[in-house]
Image 1: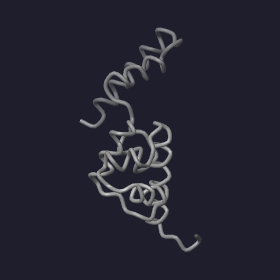
Image 2: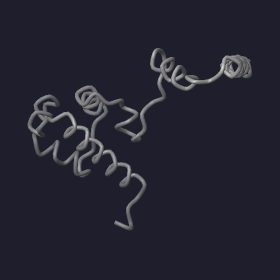
Image 3: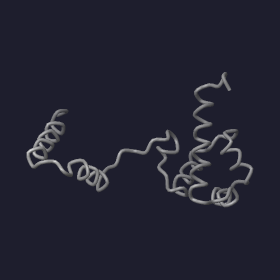
Image 4: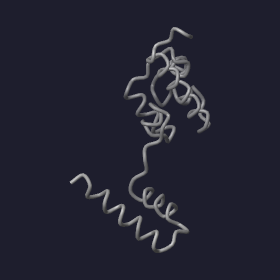
Length: 116
């Protein structure tokens, strides 16, 4: 596939992520087809990259597979926010001295006000 376009590569990568996500949650192509309201061959073609996936189908698949749209489209998970972000920060500063934690807090304040 040396003559493939970037669009071809993106479609094939999406197809692979869809197949892996379906297999991870343990659903058959028939079960996914029933949820989407399409035929099993349509699901097979999506996973082979020979059928385009509609936006509404992609949204349903993300919910069904418990994956973000960003992950399905790009392979990257979105950055955490809210409680997940706080948990990340707690892990990041765990084991630091109080002086280092104070420095992290000052840096966070700097970053918050830098763009204003």
